[in-house]
Image (cartoon, rainbow over all chains, first blue to last red; front, side, top):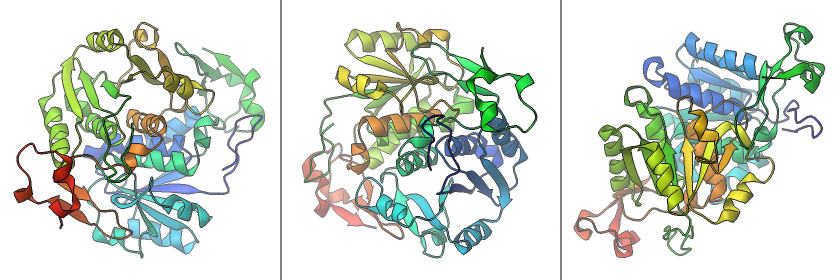
Length: 216
Length: 216
């Protein structure tokens, strides 16, 4: 992913990462899966597949975030996980299963080996105990542990992406959107896009110029 | 924090970080706060304060994790947040409020300025909208954004700690505990401490020697 130094806007990425969230249960996992999706978006992933179960509420929350805050992050729910993996591998991508049992990202060279493939990455995370298949090479090209202690799939996705993209997405402004934060040492400062300067669906760089934003 | 190269065991840290979780609602936030606590532990924090409300269930889950997986991570619930901040500052520590409105950790020098204080850090995270006081210098010495986009307090704690400790806790084995993972490229490998070699409360380095573990 390249960042345009003059605008901080993320250019189209030469390296796509999507997250595949397996085992989502809408009643129990709504907030955690929402967090995983928002983390994926904020840390540079292009989209998330929430497999095997349709969740329109989750789609709505994520799409609303994209509408408000910009970017082109996508969510698809209800796709069978085997189909996602097959399609990803079929189109030349690699799969990375995040699991506490895998190779430790902070030891050895697993991150370098993943980067060296120069291929698009499907990042697989469970939220229940995953089927043993997930560890096989038919499903996962790499099994990676964000440390070998129990913690959180949300944190695992965050740290993988932060290290994979070397923090660039955190520095970048997402294109489009209605609101953005102007970072401050104290207090809150938020800018809202002037509606008269923006036609529906207008996400051109012209529309992102500071003159089109009002601090609120 | 220093890691003993021969054992990978974390030595007593010269720089303590505790997390202060504000606004926890046991019915709604149980899983997210559990994740925040486990992330704090796995990424090198010494403990977590969950303020203003007692949650024995949460304490039990976290203490059980420490008992099984080692280390000396502590949890305290129900302490008033003002008291936590007062005591921390009173004993010479600094406070860092994680907020999407703050200085971006990936831009500028905020992380360096925090490290340069060489003081213990109280990492403050909300889970609802926090009181405006949190942004004041009476409460927060630093307001830090893990990017200025909405995502997750769980990911924010993870990335702050990963960058603050430069990944060392992810590489380290926690002292004591009953089980540990032996990282693998494929599949799961877990070792369990031999009970006959361990007396109750025995967390000496002697008890951590590989000969006292059985792969299961």
